[in-house]
Image 1: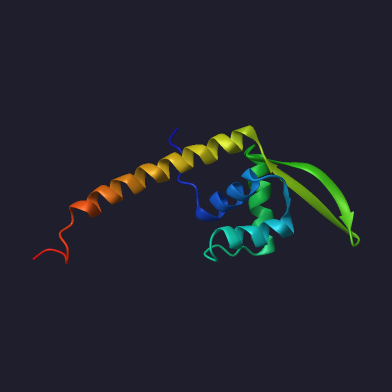
Image 2 (image 1 turned 120 degrees about the vertical axis):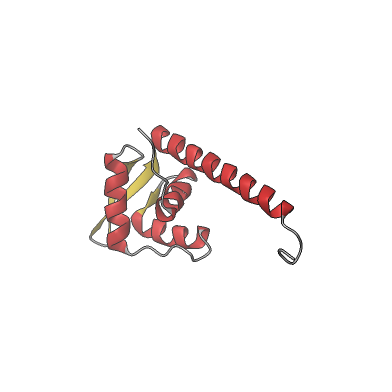
Length: 112
């Protein structure tokens, strides 16, 4: 089975969780910060993504607590999630290498 490319929001969520467990609300801010503002997730989108990632075994809930009468779930990256993130990083690095090689051959100012 061929793996599909990881979408940038998923990549960013997994990258944030690689740093340690986070609750959903913190993930919203950290994902935006880590992506330089390119990825701004809405709460509904984030929680749907977390449910999917949990089903795929890439993240898990490590604890829950009640804060201001609301349930707060903390998620962490699983070993499978770390492996998937590592594979995606390697895929992206290979693509960057190809692009850099092509750009280094490009004549200054474009084709004459």
